[in-house]
Image 1 (cartoon, one colour):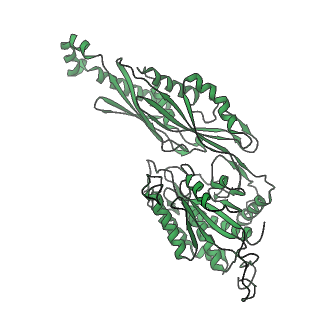
Image 2: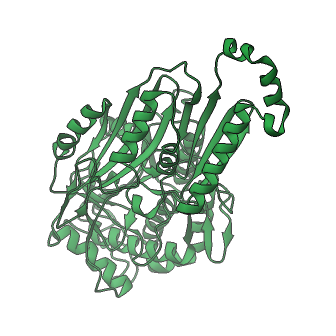
Image 3: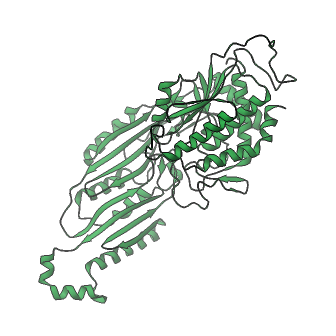
Length: 523
């Protein structure tokens, strides 16, 4: 039986493996042991896959819980051809000892996920099946790919194919939060010679924009004056997610007690109700009125609540992947826009809000920051304000910028720095991932395109450059390849993330063919 027929016969196993992986909340947590640097959820998901692979007869390697791999050893020049030979086994004499393969074909996947966030209609870790879809965080990014890649390799092995390269599924565990795990893994294991990453779109990704993560920070001093004080802001889950929610805490401070005692009788009348409402009551009423007016005029959503003497202001946006901020609605931007309506007492907090609205706001192209740019292969730069944390002493805003493949890091920081200096805010540089690019006529790219076209009949789609960042950047000859098909919605990092079981199996067949073509001989 050919590997594609075997693969289709294992459809239920593919689905079962994906549901098993989705059942773990593998968003990054606090270290919980020597071999659990990214928390229990990540570690348990990782062990689940390694144990399955070992039970199925594959070799496994663990880099101390930072990552690892599943490997199928190849044989140099000992290529079986299940697609062409009758029995699907090598024609080498039985008494001839095959020489081990000296090249490795790598397929990096990752089992960590971004936090589920709020607003799901299904259990984000339930793996529920409905209407031909499997729901759950990670179904598209990247546990679905891990499931079909594993199943494709298993089907190839069962078919009798003997690869001319070692085939290695490399398992990353902190792809969404920093790549420290991959760095540690590669400090212990030599990188593969080539491969692809199933963590983007079809037909093939021949380029990835450069990615910059950095923080914008400002220190505050508080004012004793009466009026609205902004005591805190929180929003967002990760730099590479458009935040779907953000919250501010406001307190309305009345005049000092000495002034109140001079009008003691009047003060009692104000606290009693009716025309005698306290200034705090009036402040909250004003806040509610402004929120209603804002929602009506902008069609955005602001919710105000009272918690003792504090006022909670919740902005609701629409989450999306940080590589495509234009497809979401940034809740931090909504909140900052709304807060600009108030005469906040604390001058430096107000100045930061003004800076945000003037230089970031709802823009996703970086124009007001002076960094709008584009090129022919990859299009325009994108900007996402991913997280914000503020208290009475300081604010830190995490930014995520994706810049064109022909540009450099200094092309971003250079124009932006004077604007930040003028506003009195500091910048803290974080992880930088340089761009990746292969020409369309590269033999490797052409092979992947041929496999895709032969399986889909799609001769119109061409290689594309994306703003997303995949593990392809960590290796010398690697590109992203699927699993999202042209025309399918990109649900990575979004509420109700889900994958079609038909698309899963279609991708699995493409991956099996690609692995076969790229490991049956030297490319």
